[in-house]
Image 1 (cartoon, rainbow, N blue to C red):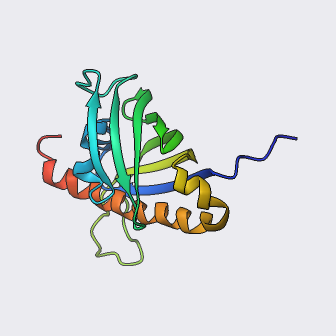
Image 2 (image 1 turned 60 degrees about the vertical axis):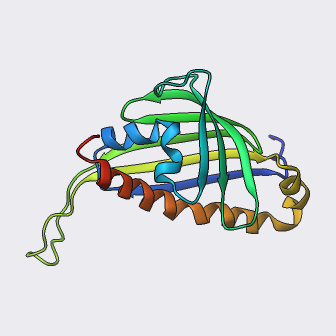
Image 3 (image 1 turned 180 degrees about the vertical axis):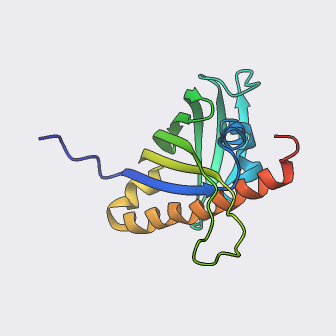
Length: 177
């Protein structure tokens, strides 16, 4: 029988629907330097490390992020797998240490058949995020046994901001993506 995960282990599996093709979504998401530009209010900083000039395996940034609770998380993000336009995988080290794997897949346009006059709903991208991290920030390690549901809610607060922010970023930059 496998050992239970450490008390400070968190796993989040979430889905986003982005009304742009996977190539455009991947191009933005794979470039960690852009995180504060589209995941506004969550990613506060994303500073390139060691000559980061484009998304590539091994490229890393120093990031700072927050949720609705009054603390900030500092960690590095390093790309571990990049397969355009389907996969983005990273490892994080610092206040959050672990992995995050994004799978992108095209969603076909659809039509609301119950209302024949409705226009087609544009296709886009379904993004599935699977994040597995240890909360290593001393405050989080100390309080996780008591406040784990609150810390998890703090993370879930960030999700709609990612979906809305990525969509808005792509709308603003559609001609350039």
